[in-house]
Image (tube, rainbow, N blue to C red):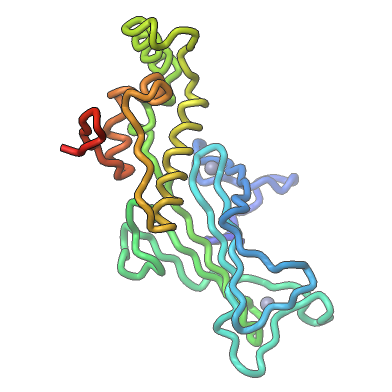
Length: 243
Ligand SMILES: [Zn+2]
Ligand SMILES: [Zn+2]
């Protein structure tokens, strides 16, 4: 699928010019939890079918969601399929592109902090009787690098851990500073717990700032990150009363 005209061949080895030297050569990985796929490859689509392949690039961390939608299927239409000798495969043509910065009101879903969409590309099949529609949504990474810097920098994370341990050697006895990988893992767990609580409509679990894991990984240097993620600071006395 190409959103724009294919680049011209530049030599006999059919290599293509990339737009910019520094453009990412995306390495896409599927995020299975966010995919909606047919149960088996023998399931035929019908007018209620919509499938989603959700991917992210491990290099630039952008998201690429590919929606395959049959819901516009009109009576008498037939999708291309392998058993149809004349229309074995879909041949997609770009019909619309929406850039969030230029036409935010035309996006299928509004851009927000939790939906950092930047581009939408819409395709249809050149076989006029085929009902398929494909939409590719490209979204920026959900967390900006400046918010993550305090936990991605291994020197900072180590220094934070060592400082905590030196301040309270008895409390942190036997513990080592954490790695950025561990800190990211803890952050992921906090976000996932909060999301599950939100989905179940229950109160989110509290994280004590004095918690050893929290203190070693984040301390006070990551407040901006937690505020951005809508965690709230509450002050409790020793009986658990909120003030
Ligand atoms: Zn990439
Ligand atoms: Zn088709």
